[in-house]
Image (tube, rainbow, N blue to C red):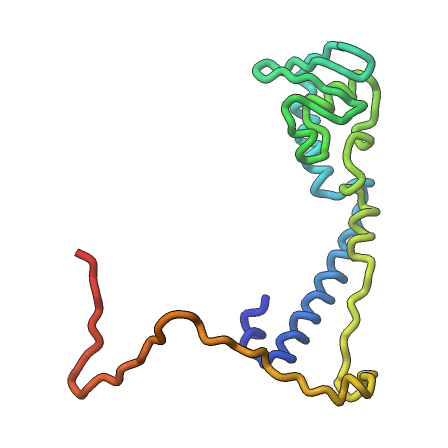
Length: 182
């Protein structure tokens, strides 16, 4: 995105970065507003795929919110109240795994209640709700007088430790030696 802009002077580079961020935020905000589900499209796709897997699983009730889910090769214990599964996918993604979806179907719990609030469209819209404003030209900045009179000097650089490397000027006809490992 900044291939051309990285050749600009510093202030122009920062303006290009600011314009890019303004465009990204506006684009993502518009995408989030147009989403048709209560969860984001990405999360909805993952939950649908896991829901298809969960339809082939058998669920046994263990305790109030605890279920033992048999899926053939990797059985798991699910606690819907604590939002935990022994496969650890539920805890890592904070999206219901196939085992949790199978247990939720048995109880009659909607699958959207199991997903974290971070995956809702409201959270996505809130993430990109703030506007990024352009800085404007320097002539229109309100700079306090005490700040504008300050002179900013470059940092004091300490020479690196160790013996300095000297660059030798090659004589006529002399070539730089290249070392090759044998």
